[in-house]
Amino acid sequence: KEIWGAGLDVFEIEPVEADNPLLTMDNVVVAPHVAGKSWESYPRRVDFAFSNMQRVWRGEAPESVVTED
Image (cartoon, rainbow, N blue to C red; front, side, top):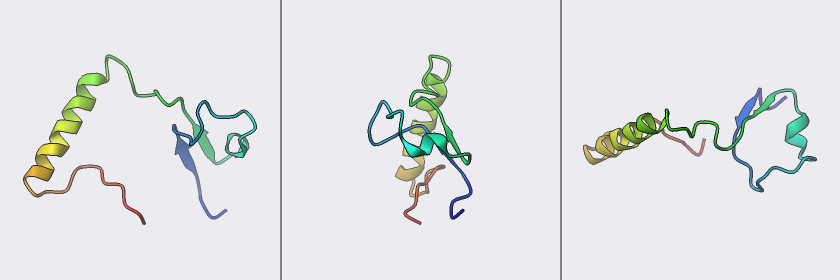
């Protein structure tokens, strides 16, 4: 396998179609798009976003960077 595994919560077409081949792969885990969206997680998400904005304003890299590699 070229890709060892993947965890996905976003698809190009949502809701994901039942015949999407990704749903049958044994090395793919699929979660609902709102898996982390809860009132309990909201303060942490806001803190994380503001922390990253402050890092960028100081000329530092954000904690989580998505690269094209």
